[in-house]
Length: 515
Image (cartoon, rainbow, N blue to C red):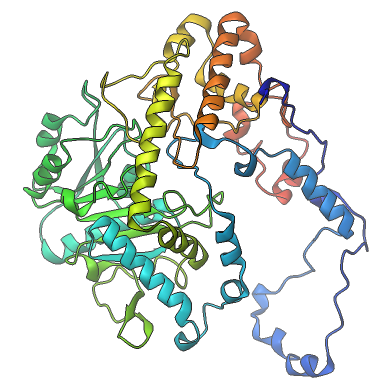
């Protein structure tokens, strides 16, 4: 494919609230039957007066063709996973999500379920939730799972709450108020610990790229509540000393939480419990091929040992040999963390993925992810100005954190400039790294098992071309994008100044004229 000829559609499309005209309709709702009207006549009286609207909500008034035209135009201005190579979105595990899974989730048997239905009428979905937990127990080695979290960060935070409940139960009177994490683990780890009120101690990497063991031993004390660590970290380096780290934390009475959002290269190869961890979590919307959903839907699967199972959120899903049911009778539980029972449609897709591949298939997926990543690194080694810092000669697992630092020093073009330029080649803007950028000018690609050799070659060739542009015509890269729907660069102040930021139509109208 000649990506140089790519040009994204660009429409000067107003927001939907500014389209249509008063009285216009796309559908006529039939009048309510007299019987229904009579049965619901007093319904409004049940709503407290303070919650009643003073006037009807302002809604778009448009015909069906206008609605279709509006959203089709917006879709043409969006580079999505269905026609893109999302290798650049490292740490996000942007693998192919089988379309058949969407058909399962759209079935009336799923989408028309109501969370308030009696248990006897939802045995099918409860069985799927229960069996998914059983599969995850086998994959992780853990003794119990909870699927209530609405995403990875919530699962991380829920694990911290379990850790706190455990110490409050078994270490009464002790002041365990410190949690240790590492600089190159996911930011959700220190964020969750701090939110729960813990002092966070962050370990920096040594020259090998791994957390410094001497720094860990110096940080351990009777105040240590636990360790939160990602392995492999976002560098893609798997820490061969992980068991030694876990044992050191256990020696002072701390618990160890394994952030396994980066699981995709470990299926069937290593398990959290085998490394001694007390807790872990998976992102079902990543490794288990349920789509990312722009803040939801998602599912953070939270796994713990038998000792910690009583503290998991309510409700637990049980099976008594005849029926599946919710168990709320758990005195030590940290309680509810989400309404009802999470996002069952996401769990359904993960269930289908596991059932389709089986144990051997999951292991093959991991091995292919590792192969793809190391082939990608070989190709990217040909790109001028791009290096692979830390642990020279050590192979990465299924993602890698590279650096454009030499290119930046020689041309002035930064990783953010390249991030915008890739859009001109039809790629989605890549995710360079979490802040702070310990590795300067970072670039973190992650080629999952679902990308072909041709995809990886095409992806690599684009960055080789952009590198050549940076050395020959740096201003071309620095002023990008040129062929995107949004041709102008977003000014940084728009993202931080509350007076310039409009997140809703009402906020836009309120701030109109201030920009």
